[in-house]
Amino acid sequence: MKKIATTPYDTAEHLRTPKEMALYLQACIEEANGDAAFIAKALGDIARANGMGQVANDAGLSRESLYKALSGDRIPGFDTVLKVLSALGLSLHAEPAIRSRR
Image 1 (cartoon, rainbow, N blue to C red):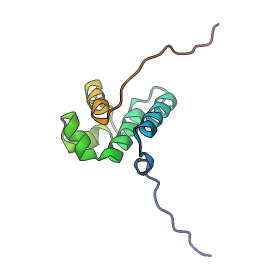
Image 2: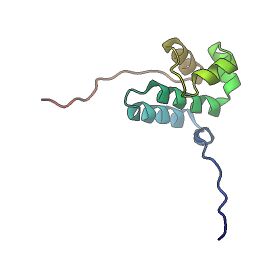
Image 3: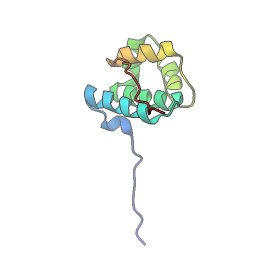
């Protein structure tokens, strides 16, 4: 039987425009179900798409600490999230949640 060669899928390779990055982050927030590490990992994907070194520099963080914070293995501080969002040119928005009436 012939073996099929595969390569790992890397989300960062498919995030090309600021709009794609914002839509990806929004989708991840909606799917996270309160999992902050999942959202941090999504920010990590976006940061890698932009160049982790540049994002770290723009956020005023070391590259190593940024990799750790956005690995998905831990939950970064909210100040770190805000710095990274700013460095990525993304903003945080709030809107009323749609809740079912009982």
